[in-house]
Amino acid sequence: MNSFVYIISFFLIGSRNMKDDAMKRELVKGDIVAYGFVCSLLEHGVKKMVLLQNTITDALFIQPEKKKHIQDAFYDAQRVYHGMCHLARHFKVRRARKFDVQSDLCLNPLSELSPHIIYHLYDDDNRTLYSFRMSDLMTIVNTALLHSPDFFADPQTIRNPYTNIEFTRAQLYSLYFAVKRSSYVTPLLFHQYFKVDFNILEFCKSNECYIREAAIESFVRNASTNQKYLQILKMFVDYRRQLEGIVIHDDFPKKKFVAHFSKHLNDYLLECYSLNPAIRHFSKRKLKGELLRFKTLNPKYGRKIATVTYKTYTAESAKQRDAITQTPFVFGSTSPTEVKRTVVYSFVDEVITKAPKPRVRSIQKRRQPRSRRASIVRNRTLTDMNTSTSTSALLDEAFTSLRMGNDTPNTPNTPNTPNTPNTPNTHINAIIDENGDEIEDEATDYQSDNSIDIDVIIDMMNSDESTIDSESDVNYNEIEDYDDVEDDDDVEDDDDVENDDDVENDDVTSDT
Image 1 (cartoon, rainbow, N blue to C red):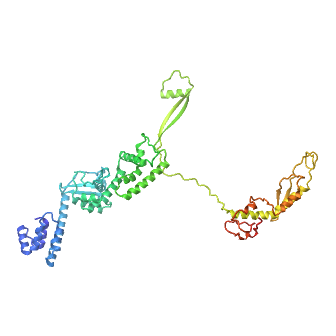
Image 2: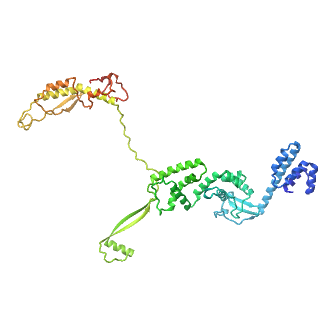
Image 3: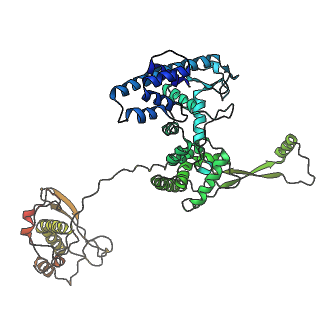
C-alpha cells in the first residue's frame, strides 16, 4: 500500500492502526463503497482525480452524504500527502550531493552572480544537485525545441548538459514555474511545450509553422560567416533579374559581402521556407524592392579597380632610392630619368543606402495663362485707343513735314547745303499720351519722292477700307475669321481678362 492509500484510509475509518490487514478489515466493516474506492487507488496507471470523478462524484446510486464523506477524506489526504512530499523533497535537497561546477556555461563564476538568477536543479535518480544560470537553461530549452536541420522542424527533448540525460516531467514543470517567478520572459516555445504537457510529438504538430520561422530568425542571428555566405549566393542566383549588372569579384572580401547583405537574408529565407503564405508574399515583395534600390544606388558594387600611378625619378633621386632599397646597379643605364609604374588594386565596397537629395531651386512665379479671346480683345482695345489719339496725329504730322520739306539736289555734304546728297530727314515728334505727358518718339525715316502724291496717301489712311497695323501683331481683317470673337457688348469681365487700369470693357468697340 502506497502512502496516499494509507493516508486516505486513515481519514475514511478514523483509525491509527498501521497494519494493512487490520486497515482492510475496518474498511470492509465500515463501508463497502469506500473499500472499493481504496482498492481502485491501488491499481497502477490510474489517475486519482479521474477515478474520484468517475466512481464517486458522477455515480448515480451513492447517497449524497456518502459522496461528501469520501470527497472530504480525499481532499484531506491530498493536503497531507503534498505537504509530506514537499517536506521529503526539502530533506533530499539538503542532503544531496552538489555537482562540482563553479561557473556557468559561459565560464563566468557563479559566486559573482546574483542568487535570483541561479537555479538549482535536483536529480532524484542520482541524488545530485546541479546549479545553472537561468539564461543558460532558457538557451538550452530554445536550442532543443528549435532544432531544424535545413529549416525543417525536428524538435528534440531537453537534456541535462552535464549528464546528457533527459529532464523528467517533474523537472520541466519545476523549471517552467521558476522562470515564471523570475524577471525573465518565458520563451514562447517553452510555453507552448508546457501547454501540451511536455509531449514532444504534440508540440511539433501544433507549432511547426512557428518553429520554422523562429529557426530562420535564429539562423540569421547566430549562423557563421560561411553559412550566411552560401545563402546569400543562392539569393543572388534566385534574384539575378533584380541584381542584373552587379558583378562580385572572386577576390572580394567575404566578411564585407556578408555584412552588407545580411539584412536581406531574413526576408529571403522567409520567402523560401516559411509555411505562412502571407509572410512569404510580403517578404518576396519587400526583398525585390530592396534589391532594386541597392542596384540603382550601387551599380558598381563588388568590382575590382586597378589604379595605375607613374612616378618619375631623376638620376640623383634614383641613386638615393637604390641606396635605400639596396637595388643593384644596372650597367648601361644612361637615361637621366626613370619612370616607375605602380598598380594598386582596390574594390568598390562602399554601400550607399540613401539617395542624394535634389538641389532646391527657386520657384518662379508663373504667369497666369491668358485665353486667346481675352488677348484679342485687349489688343483691339489698345489699338483703337492709340489709333484714335496718338497714331493719327503722328501720321498727319509726319506726312506734313515730308510734304513741306525741300531737298536740294547736288549738295554732297549736309541737307540744304551745296554738295550734299539727298538724305532722309529725321524728325522727333512730341506725342502727348492720355495722362498729358510728353513722349519722345523717333519717326520712321522717309525719303521724299516727287512721284508720290502725299494727299492720296493721307486720304487712303483716313479711309474706312484701309487696315492700320498698330504696335500689336493683330490684324483686324483676320479677327473676323474666329468664331469665338463675339460682339463687344457680350464681352464680360471674367477672370481670364487681366485687370488693367487703362482698359475698360465698356470702351471696347468693333472697328472691323
